[in-house]
Image 1 (cartoon, rainbow, N blue to C red):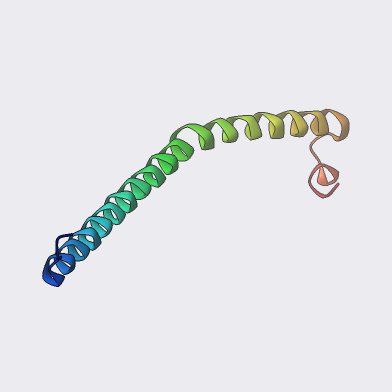
Image 2: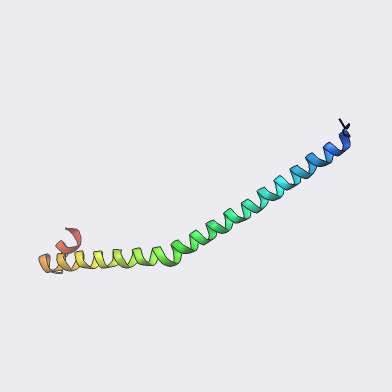
Length: 78
């Protein structure tokens, strides 16, 4: 059985540690990029869609309230 040199084991462990740190750094960069993409999706697609839907719902409610009450103090205060 060959005798192993302790220095070579240290080199291997430091290399493994370096690879692990590098892998962690790359995984962290990919995670941050995914979060940026998700943020862009929300701000470019979902918020305008939700705002359009909410605006239409609000205008339908306001128009129905206007037809029922007219444009007076009771329209604003209920």
